[in-house]
Length: 535
Image (tube, rainbow, N blue to C red):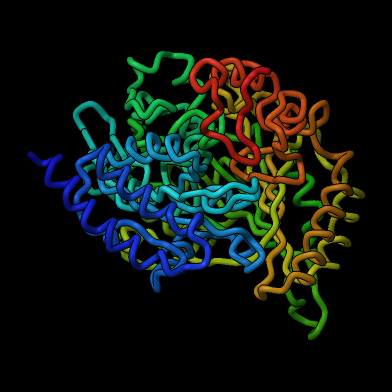
């Protein structure tokens, strides 16, 4: 009875939509929304009005929804192609229907959980076909089970919401995922999901024990029904190549009731170069409870107005008390000069807010807002470093940073548990031998094509300079810091995709291709850097 009522409701509304859109000069494009809507109604229990979950470019709210979680404003510039429709499913069967209907209507699907894709491929497309965004923002349920130390989280939930719900149930349980709390958990884990507890517990993908996914046939699968090959592939093989993640089941980890944080900054005038060179000797070998990343940017000199210098900030979390932390740093890294006044003890959930950069005494409830702290126009790249960069190399790097308006680098230490997990355990291969990972960013705040070209050119110049200091054969890259400069699918060929695939996944790329060929032989789930099928 429900399906009949839904179908009838859809038919009436579709007739109205046809009348409204038939006056448009481009009927072939404007029929996409009404066909997709009608198909969703026929293939699920959806019976709500069109405007409750569907947004077209003609709607006043279209740009609001499109821009709501898009992190890189560069991907929203007028020259970038926009979707024909945005669909915000309310239930899992609606997601199933979106796959069935996109296949039936020969539409591309772009799937967005948090909008953090660095090249925006979860909400834009340069592939030249009509496309629809399935935005999972309404699928954000979280169920924490403290008896078995696990939690299910739907794909649209943010990392911050997951952390909050865990801490709500327990002060000594946590999950080792991202530092940015507005990340959508669905897409975040598909690329690896690193965070401030990675040296102790590994990545998010190393702590996932089940998942629910919609495959290319529109079928919902869990770990048992999808099989171990597909379960392996979705945990680090990159988003939107194998299906649509509906939810993850996470194994929670034990955290101390008291953790310690600190941020110590050094400029070039404070001897930053020598301190950073020493950091490279110890960052991956120091106690695995200590995550000590370095945030590098350009600031004004304190004593010379109008002049700039490079600042390195050691932004850190220690899974223990301050006394133990000071003993460790004084023994292993005295060059940092860490003192009692630099460290602060707090709860794990408070440390999440600290690392993100919230003001002191910000209530944890802010994490439930799921909002990014900033949005920018930016271009990013990544590297993995296996041999310390000499001081002369660092000095050349400083010269390049001082050329740019708003450069940013983040160096994340490896070692600990990261070195104990095999490269082939998950598709994420950057494990033993990595000292640290570099994230490069350049940011600007104006929607200007010439300005964008200028900053992207500088980023490529910086990346070229770092070639001799980065990993080699291949020069590795992190898939969650997606970089289309590494290559794009033009005809989904294996040879073409191998160029960037080997950088992201190393030898795991071949297994990913084999699995893709089995589970999605028609290559329905495709984008500019999706895993190809074997030809």
